Length: 116
Image (cartoon, rainbow, N blue to C red; front, side):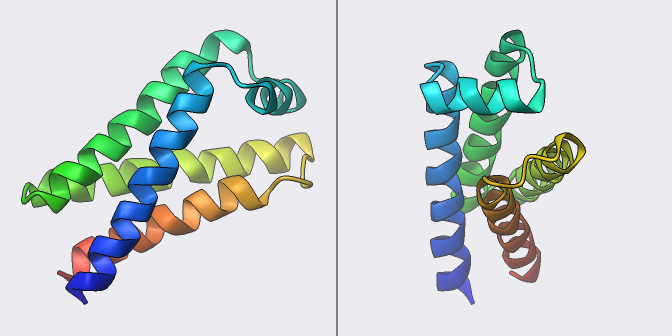
């Protein structure tokens, strides 16, 4: 179980760092997606900061600060539940795999952190 926790959490950290970097750099696909969803460009840095903070918290959890890791997994779960809801609200389904996949990773990280 510990190996699954480490692997899933490392993948979750990696994808959230990637997403935060894409948001901070205002990558073209990020700008296009946020425009489709009606999210102002000014929200990108705070959203990227939340993703990066979640990744950092998960890393702290891996390093032994369990309650921070659990809190980060809860935060990322809520964040990506909101992202899925934003896609549904805007009826943008063609790229739902991204927020849905990120949500599943966050939930798996949370479940495995709690099972430890």
